[in-house]
Length: 530
Image 1 (spheres, one colour):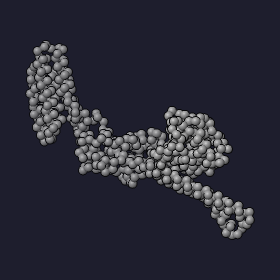
Image 2 (image 1 turned 90 degrees about the vertical axis):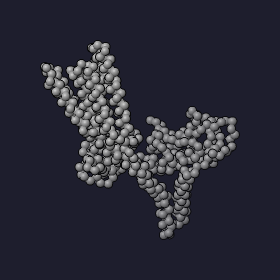
Image 3 (image 1 turned 180 degrees about the vertical axis):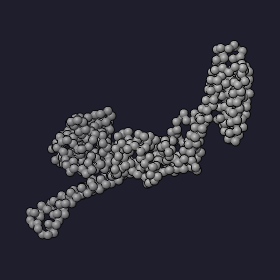
Image 4 (image 1 turned 30 degrees about the horizontal axis):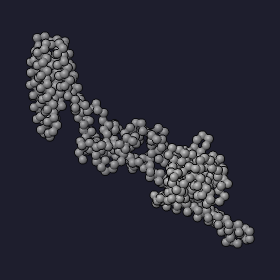
């Protein structure tokens, strides 16, 4: 990959003012200013003649610049030489039209010649600059009277030459840094398309950074705060301080896991590594690369919490099975006690079976959801599909709102989702359970709540993740439930064609199910497959 071709995802961090000498041409401003001055303070003939010659000079330089840009560096030297000699001849013509060596134009055109000599890729042309300086010094020395203006002009002229030499050297340095860094960046982008930034090894100045690195904050080492994950934390530790410590130790070591706050307020887990890159005898560059491993970290945390939750879920019903089985095996239970133990074992077994059925149903619905959609009223949905199939449920459920609203859904998984939420409130909340119905835009919303404080879930928390991640605490308190019912209800609602969310205000909470509106003219019970 040619580093000059440009890499869309890489942004240079070198300030523009440090490379402006490469593109700035003083001829245009000098010619424009002096021709304007001649037009204002001179007669008409000389300004017109100077303007014509100056125009030829600009066309001459622009044409050769364009030609030089299309040619190899070896031939560019000849182009610069021809341009310099031609410009010098045209400068002589302008000086003749503008009053000789005492003219400001003569002073300005000498600066142009020096500029061409200093910026030329052919070092031998530097003698043109020396010749121009000697010519100007000779003009002043050979004058009949050396005025203060001449001396001041000479001082300005020499100072300007010094500025040119310094600017040229600075520009060349940063161009080398730019080319070197871009070459390395191109190789790194091909090898590992992750977030990376290149710094100067001595100053820790960021030279290049790709889009991902800017999003992580790697391009702004002085302000980005990071914390080593699972290790000692240093308050207010900046990325620049971490990098400086790695450079000072001389051993970057293996990549480390860090936590960086993002703009959304959530933590981003970054695996950050550092390596020193050196090209030939040039100063080393510090390459900082980072990979967003948030999903992997959360997946590991998800697995850990899943194992904790599964242990909690199955250990609770297994405890009475094991305890009563030991008593029965030792012959310590008889009569009514034996029957009571058998019922407890049967209840615990039924609970385990229910847990396994829920988990397998969640996995099946997430893997291959199939919908059998019908158009049905809310009244039919609750009376026929929910209450009639579960006797005794109507004693703890109250319905509010318009029962005649029509929705399109798969009633069986939807009413199973409603039952899971009702059962969750019955077990861990404060019955009765209220289901309110209202029309919202192009949807019908069912809001379910009880009289208790509700589950410990923030408003807007996604309910589709593994149940144990819904709780704030590492190990959820028993009184808050197991969250499996909520996860199961979410999966069933999605399978039915709706969506489930949790809402919490200052003094109220509710699970909200949104369903698409159906056409009232449709016949209930018609089952088009989706």
